[in-house]
Length: 423
Image (cartoon, rainbow, N blue to C red; front, side, top):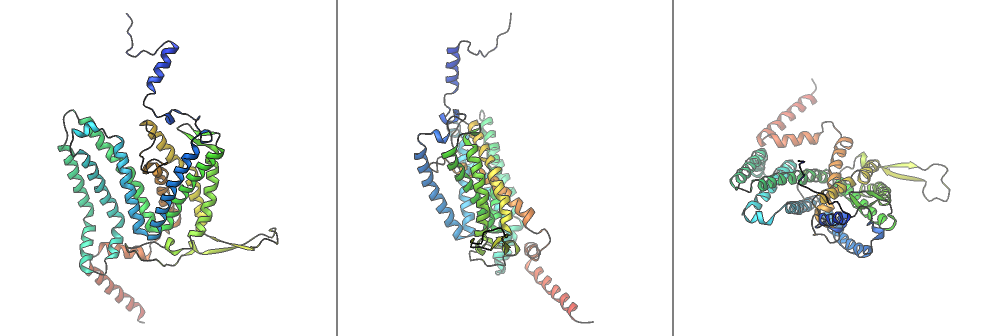
């Protein structure tokens, strides 16, 4: 007797149709489309565009205010974005029924979140915090001790959370609890990996945060409008509203914008100077060759009526082209990844905190990819790799006590004095 399978696929056409309808239940309509629902064919596209534009104006206004206020306020904005992203991602796999049986279990996610925040920002800002309190001996000793033992403190905080998790394990809930534990750690890796690079870019000079972030915004807006008016050819199945027309138009716009914006931003020391401490005052520094204008004479075939005979170009503008290429060609794949991720969980957006855009995570998918590249590019191709006076001073302030620093100062002074005295 032949063994029968437990699953039977309907044989008749009508039964197959009913089967497909049942399998598609619960899936949002726009997730079922595979290229047929382009923006040019969307009847509600103008209403959607107005809502999206209204939200964008508010976001750009808040972003510009944070830029004006300075490094610390930009970092605070990044922290707020992290919290919203974590909340959206935590809720993605949350089950209300299971959570009711595990009182306090949701608090464990946030405990790990703030422990990771203390570790990441402690490592990033430790040197700048020390530089801020060097004038106060007591506060300097306190901060130096905190910086020295910060890693040990974070480790024991994590171990306390690990023990908390073990003690909350409940019979018949093991799979859900361990799934949440793994999901929490994945969220921490995703959120804090990109944020650590973002904050590092901010203190290297707001320019290295502002330009890449602006290029992603420009690319996103340009892709939307080119696809809105000209989109006809679907780009990728996983994101059906993306078109080749939008992708190509946005790429050209982003690269040109990168070259032009670098010229504008590079002329403001407030944007180009690195921040070595946690103060909030205005910055003034030597721009260096990277932000020094270079004059190029125009070729002789330019018509005589043309008003300019030479142009000024900053060296950083050539680096900006590389950032523009990445922002327009590679960074959008962060958005495609997010689209596939949402399809896997059968959701339209990660949240609804931004009307017309979805959640904060929906706006940060490409920014995360861009922030990492910007930092790696800056450290690899822009920053000089040799030992500098600033790096030596930073190591002295970080690793030597106040008395040891005074002794070092005395010995260096004596050595220099011996060299200057003729034999």
